[in-house]
Image 1 (cartoon, rainbow, N blue to C red):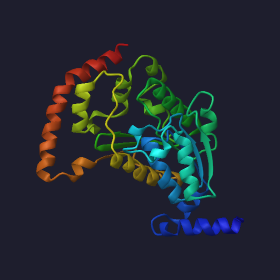
Image 2 (cartoon, rainbow, N blue to C red; image 1 turned 45 degrees about the vertical axis):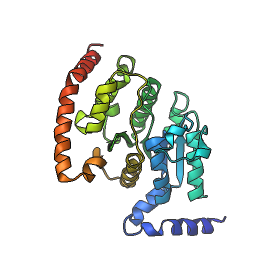
Image 3 (cartoon, one colour; image 1 turned 180 degrees about the horizontal axis):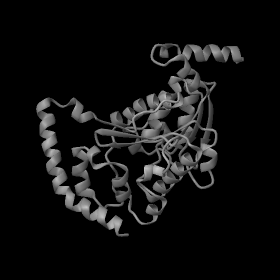
Length: 296
């Protein structure tokens, strides 16, 4: 297609954004490059809304392939099982906007790829998996380079029925993870201990507290994750990306407990009481875990 046809396509694609997305914001979306590192649960949920909002240039990175247990929440179909997640995400972008520029890194974030991933990017969506220490090392590397390049980064944690979104605006923040996790921690803390530093306990819903108490310390444990919480990350993050690209600042922390929002007032009060009891029961184990991290 000619540039005139491409412009006409883009104008029609984004015409219903008018009145919500300003002309200046739309121009920034069109000219920006967004890196989505980790295209599974939360990262994958951000790709499609960003493409539909009008982002034309993507860098997509993920070393993983789809498994059947991913299909309860990730943007994939049975035919995508065993396929690379970044490659599938790239196909979704092209299906929405055939003029999009998509670079795919099927090896994910590594020492060899990290610099190239971040170079030229305007915003980073961090969906790197942290169920393994290799994932934590890749995530911390990504944050270090984002800090060096002064690129704002949005990440999140879908925790049972709640979504905790964290914006590390490295245009202003001067330490990776705002100082909560340093590089040395990766060699002396477990995944659980790192998670306790990344996600404040006040943002952990009651369902997860019960799960944690049962499974604390299990290295093979998989967190419960459901589709509506993952999709909420995509909704929140795509809007945050619009604002960050326009030069605005956004709230550093956004937390929404879907289950609690839907419950009746009576059940919401009962859940708060249940949460307090679950937290009290879990506190000794959490304190022990936190102290073991400090003493390492």
